[in-house]
Length: 299
Image (cartoon, rainbow, N blue to C red):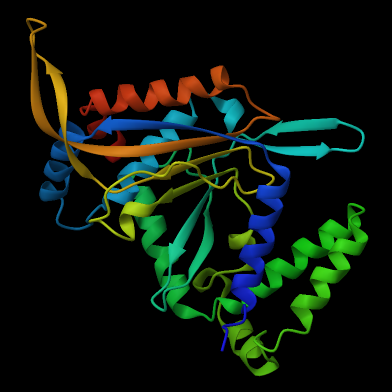
């Protein structure tokens, strides 16, 4: 007997299908030597007993700083394939959509807002608060509300028939939230629960697969871009690999180093590779200058 899609899976499959049927993906793999920056990060954590930072938060901060080097990737696209017209809206705030693994094994995309000026500590506090909100409520309720809101917007844009079919599929679903669950959800204060706004697309998606499976070797070869975003980063687990190292005398040797593979994906309708290069270069610079972490730690 097959397993039918629930509300969460329906919403994710709808968005994913939209992405892969409308967005021309281009990807680039970069392997970062993270040995020194992880050593510096561990020192920071050892000196701070009040709030422990996670490697995931560190990687989000690195990516955020890199995005600031190329503001054009932090944008949304509007495109009409029939008229071949388009518009790219660059957004000042960096709102990161991050796939969040739930205890039951499901994955839900949560948007972390206004990360452009946050310190490492502020990022970690925001993420910890988000974890508390997730624990406080039935996520199928805001996910259902966010999905139906998205479909209504699609119909208003003129995608009437497709929107109606999808809307019917959502509303007739037996797994959709019942009235009792919705009432209980409504009782929770807004500051203590995930809302439909928290599930709306951010300006960029960053997914850390290493947080799901730390032992997994390899890298992401291609990564999904969530429309209307135009850029995404897929991060893999920390791996030990032999690397060529140069000393002060420019002499080369081979050492076992800690490497983090990153996959940069962009929408070729909106960006050319040269516009993405500054992000990759900034990532490389950060990993080569671990002392930057001291400035990011707090204000």
